Image 1 (cartoon, rainbow, N blue to C red):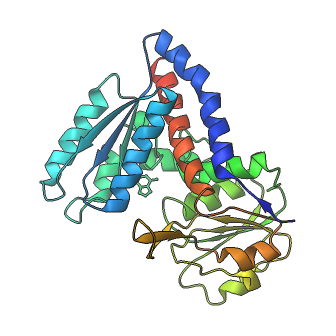
Image 2: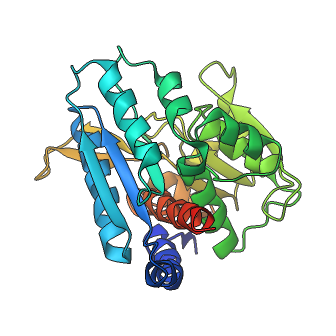
Length: 291
Ligand code: GUN
């Protein structure tokens, strides 16, 4: 039987594990705080940010939220980040991506105090992670590591294939998989839109991480029997549901599940883990800032 990897259950465990640390910090006068900054009208971004705020409330992290009109001058965003960097009760800062075209994204990432960069996207934190000395691991790859760990999927010596080379998922995921660390030591291949024969690579994977953002691009014929399949895709496709859309992964679930030993569903797989690891990073930031 194929094992369905339940991200909601593992995420709930992670949140439970954080509540003690949160209350200890709160008792010492340093309740953790996360600031979210949204400079977008995009419905998906609005939903993600409001879910992150709700997650904070549920575990006792104070959430601060700033909305900036997407047509405002870039300076408004930089001033906001500068203020949040100085705010003592804000331990973590997350600027929801993407930002509008007139805002220099790289400058935004550099503007956040690296000690408050709970996304792990600041170049200093990216460099530390690549060097094997991570301060904040990016939330999605970190969440995937936790899913693999909880489901006792060994990375040591495994053939891992990551499909997608984004800064947020593909690159850091591949980097964590190759590290000399308990959750690393995988022989790792990164595939992307210019890969000539994608299926030839994916069919070799003991661990396949699909993070290309293309709905159902990977089907069962591309999966090695017995593989662990991690589907990072959250693609909104028009559908006759109450919301007018349906969430579809990068993996064609039915045929993939026939081949795989274990697979994450969409929704309910990687998504909740990304959110849980943001809370984890915020608590870590608060602990470090409390000294
Ligand atoms: N947009 C899509 N994913 C993310 C994420 O993990 N962090 C931020 N800040 N923006 C995103």
